[in-house]
Image (cartoon, rainbow over all chains, first blue to last red; front, side, top):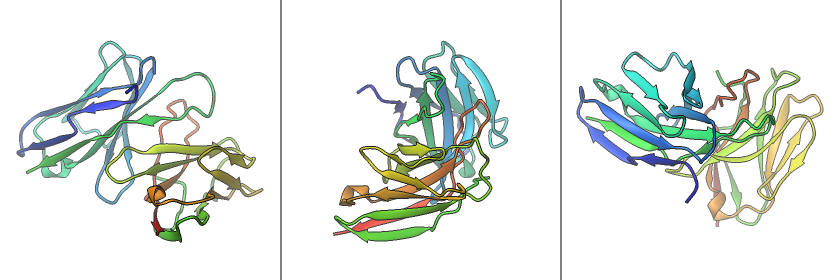
Length: 116
Length: 111
């Protein structure tokens, strides 16, 4: 399968614990996006990378959140000292900046986080 | 904030056309309209996009009004597998290309 993959698919943790999610984008896609989706709502933008550079962070991304894309390939999203309000689906998407306005984003299946 | 307004839910019969409306009255001249859908427990999936002209692909057709203040996504022959949440998005014009989702329309295709 050459689509976007995310790991793990599900994560249950206790409040106060740290969690890390991984996203593997489509090969050669230089843009990588993270979104968060709570129940009944559309996805909300968190941050994005162009290659290894993190170019924008939403105000939703508190100090407890950190994202990296060290070699411009896979990315990790870490949440420190998790809170119950962090419970959500975390989605990763990738695209290639080929210069066209119509380049779509390809989404992974998401990581569902439950904080007890 | 999302720049689009969609009905929260719709339904249609299997085999019939599903017409999903979207209002984007504040759209700017160079902003594209994108449609994505999200089947339960999956990530969003791209459907189609357009700027001014009507567009058609193997999944759907997109009809944009002449004033560009609204659009309609048409699934010509809906199947049960088309049951999903459909998002109409006006894509930001900055270099991020990030997507600002609204709440979408939950489409139920009835057998």
